[in-house]
Length: 415
Length: 168
Image (cartoon, rainbow over all chains, first blue to last red; front, side, top):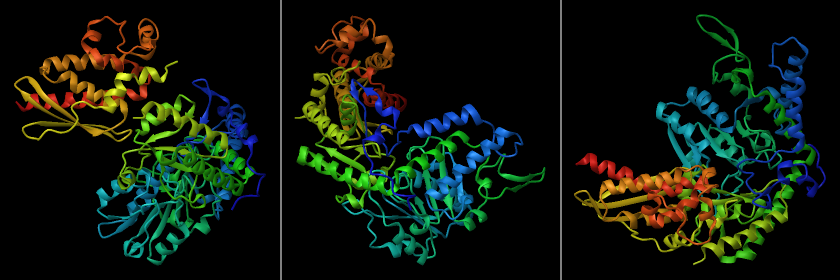
């Protein structure tokens, strides 16, 4: 649920992102790689700068003024993040280093105490490596089975055999939105199916929370992970949200300061949730920055953010097809309402590295490679794709620049 | 500023469009060596035959970007008929060219590089003479991300030759 519908996203938004004022190779920068990392608005940069200039001190336990202020700012950010995803309690927000660490926490802590040789979990063929490799590592130690939901030719989950795959499984872990295809997966339906089968649902929402109004209750998730730097916040801070009873029952992840109530020569007593999972000095300035990012996005209104991206994705699909016709193939769902603003495409037979290199000369930033989703690449029958991804600060001129710069690729590599 | 013409020299595009010695030899008797670029998933598969110390034939398989494919194609043309020692010398020269720091070519050597003509004719050191057409890849150094593409095939060949030497 978004906190209030802001005005429509317009050109004023771009001006709030200082980096987008710069040029690259003599051209104004055209940043189309927000699925990898978003740019940061002045509000976030200022919040972090102010924190370091006026508040900086270690959090918790300090009796002096600025230590209390640092703690208050960090805990305010926790409350902001909880509100942003409609979590029942701020105590259910665990700060991590990124979404990858958050997923490793779920695997190591929940998986490590709940999965054994007789068990199974279910993943999908469109997962990011962050939602694959932690399970591979754990499975090698504990011997449980990993099952895979396949994808259809148009890049959606093939749920034909869902009930059979979930039968006897303890967890379904799935991305809410593919970082390669932009596919939006039917999370509430998957939650219901998982729960009917007695399994929990873990959601990789790294590409979802930054772009759509998010309500963990409506999604039906038991665990959800996402990262700050893809949602206008800084790098170095990610989030695990989970239902309190799950967090309460889970053992600590990392050990050290902050995560204990008491330590003796014989052992330790863990702290309460969420501090049990936040060993050591946290990335305080980054957490403060993430809080500012959340408030910034709330100011825009997440309904408006989503509407802007649906509109721009439709414009991009039309423009690229109109200009380049059969030379270009965009992977994933063709209907903008069923996808996010992530456009992975193939242009003629030109390798993605070469495409991105040529586009860079026009200041157009896109990503080339396997996007940390090699099982998906194998399903698509490619080794790599070129990916353009959109966010609040992009507009139709960015799409036009991409479409025009692709002409240069055709000119250089045309046979 | 490095321009695309520094990277995509005509001779490189020619090798990309018309790769030399493309394919695969039957193993055995041929030996096989593979190279991966984990960053982009590119893969080169080399199969080569030896007569004593001489590489008598070599084929390039796999897939990748224009730089990795062209570099492997040019390498195949350069090494067939050469001895292991000659190939190791050539590999050292090529990798030395790839490891020149970007700034160091901004001075003396850059005039030759900035010229539109292929061949990088201004350089007169021994390595450059022996590298021949491979000189065209010198511009890759201005695009550090792509150096791994240019060296992919060379690293695979070095590994393959090392293994065949150990196998004797």
